[in-house]
Image 1 (cartoon, rainbow, N blue to C red):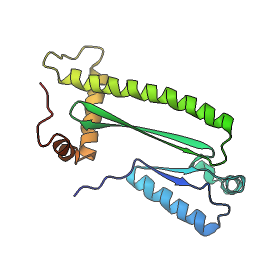
Image 2 (tube, rainbow, N blue to C red):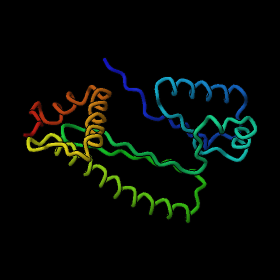
Image 3 (cartoon, rainbow, N blue to C red):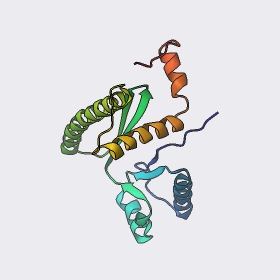
Image 4 (cartoon, rainbow, N blue to C red):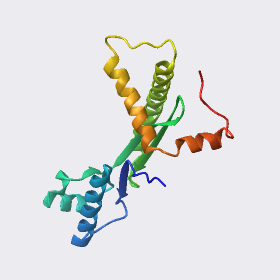
Length: 176
């Protein structure tokens, strides 16, 4: 069985009013463990008191901290010549109406951008696999990077073939 390490670990601290040294030590251990697996370790929603503690102890140098909201995006292969986009947004519970409207506008723009990214990635995958494809003098490195990226993702996502088989009822989804 293959285990997938998370791309990011997000710790939501919006309900935490106070943190002692043992709490800080736990977060530092989590940060260390995430670095060992290559994952991001993100803190979100620190109140003023917690932000002060992190600043005074200079932990802001080591931690990735988002005090009000965080948007996360991920593109990953969802099958042969198919790309899936995943997004997640965390917001502080005290967000005011103006911030909510601004965030909604940004989300709408980001959804459009992600749609374009998925379309571009999928088209590049199809184009590279086309029998008529020949790499050009100006694009060898970029195209090779896309191929290498997709191959690496497939290595990291060993269940993709199994999931494709389930989704298609065992039929091959490969196209010529």
